[in-house]
Length: 280
Image 1 (cartoon, rainbow, N blue to C red):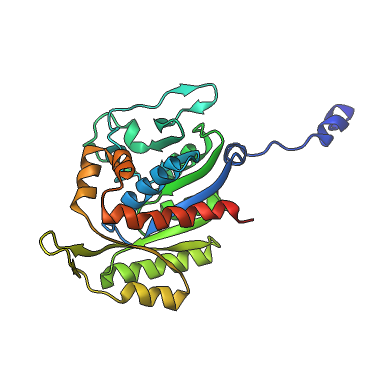
Image 2 (cartoon, one colour; image 1 turned 45 degrees about the vertical axis):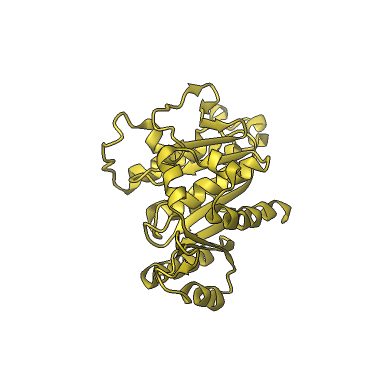
């Protein structure tokens, strides 16, 4: 019978913490970038937010959780890069000395190949990105989520129960605002603090007269902000030059140039997320 008795020294040992908890403990702030629907510029906001924080001197990681439509590698011009693996885990792709990123797009042999996965496979990939990628000590991990309030956003929220905030991206269109209101409710139900709304594609600056053209109308974002008591962080106009920089993979250089109205207005988003470091 005595051989079945558990030794006293084993009872005094602390249970090992999950690897994901240990890995994420070195990250001060985890920030989700969400949108209620696709095509509103969510990945553009996530990429510029990560780069903007890095250019202010912070150590930043950017995680692309959009399994079916990963665009982060293209935005940074790094589609041909492949991550290495060492004893610490998967090494994220470095953009700057203080900016690294990971995306399923870095693991595809053919960028045109679709990822035909059901929910469990997608959840496993996201967990591995959080658990096995060697992020190191970071000030911020920016998490670019796919649109909607389904599997991927829910998985991230559950895997990171102490997520520090969400930035919600929308456009002035009514159909986009219907969806972003759902994202606000999603964040509230999962106890993720909402940092604020980003009103993207807020008009077009006429190249001839310099006056704004309200392409999608106005007023809807302000109403959502008032209804839910969520601040509008920035109103970003349609800027062809920003799209051009993404196609060429030169957004870091573009942020340094600071030459567009979009980028000037976007500094308010970077500042709002930066302020979360000072919160308890």
